[in-house]
Image 1 (cartoon, rainbow, N blue to C red):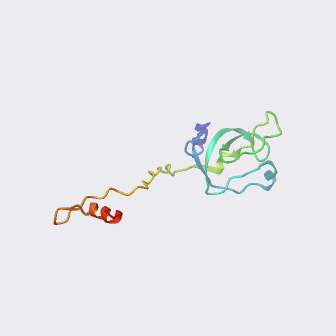
Image 2 (cartoon, rainbow, N blue to C red):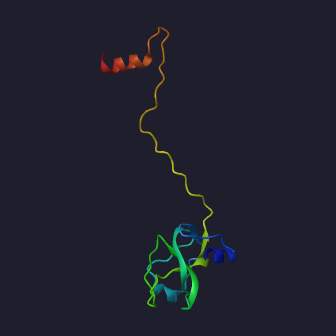
Image 3 (cartoon, rainbow, N blue to C red):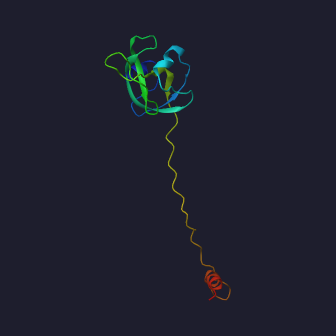
Length: 132
């Protein structure tokens, strides 16, 4: 199935791929068959690919199932979930966002500073704050 998508000029889309919706204009007559439809310029994760039924009711169209959207099953046996036409999506070119390192909530270590008389200023501050 991935080879067929490549032949049609798209990058390979597989289960787990990130895709972007490029066309969110759907025929009004199909709206009764779906709970949720994708929105243009939004990124989705491909849950699965399959052979489904086109908007005009003909079987054999390649469809995409998205992790973020769950739609009702077809009334026609074997009752698959209604997928979305693969041509509505392109593979995302955005690399995955790198996870940022958690910021430390502790203060950075302070360097010990010495006065000209040889005493440590950090120690003097601590003594002064604690009344020592």
